[in-house]
Amino acid sequence: MASLTDTTINGDLTINGHTYRSGGDITPWYQLSHCPAYTLTSTARLHIRTPLPADNVSMGWNPIILEAVGYHSYSGEFVEDFKALLNTNGYNNGWFGSQIMVNDSLANSQPYVYRSNNTYGGYTRVCLSVSQLYCCCTGNLWIRWWNGSGWFEDYPWATTSAYDSQSSPVPQF
Image 1: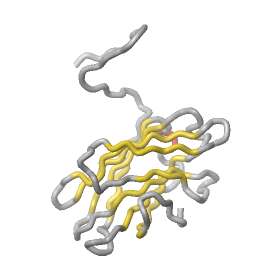
Image 2 (image 1 turned 60 degrees about the horizontal axis):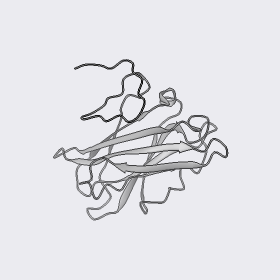
Image 3 (image 1 turned 30 degrees about the horizontal axis):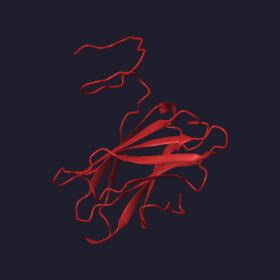
Image 4 (image 1 turned 120 degrees about the vertical axis):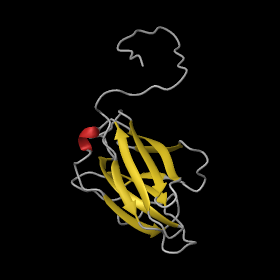
């Protein structure tokens, strides 16, 4: 495989295939294992607070991509596969988070990325929620982000489970 190290482009660029980011500003994967939902028909969601500050100190005009991939531990099928574009407004610290489904066949995934209600270590933090499994098996979720890798170990990760809607933050965070 060839690696392009430097180029100047005037006009449009079309790439047939994949591009891979080289360099070190991608965090390692952080693995979470979680229990199944409380009942087999539950609408429980797993909420995760990351160490990444959700304000101008880490982002401010500098977008970050949060990536999450999850598997069912018994049968191995995908249960989560999405990326979220995160940013803040450098002028007023306004929050922006959008979910981008990578695998469109995961209709039940419904990820939601939000800013914590409370501060931890002086900062609000990036949080996300995903649907919990509706069976008796556990799930595994891996999370990383592109850009801002210096915040990976800034503050402890946290999780909680709640019966809530897909689009509402939990009061605990």
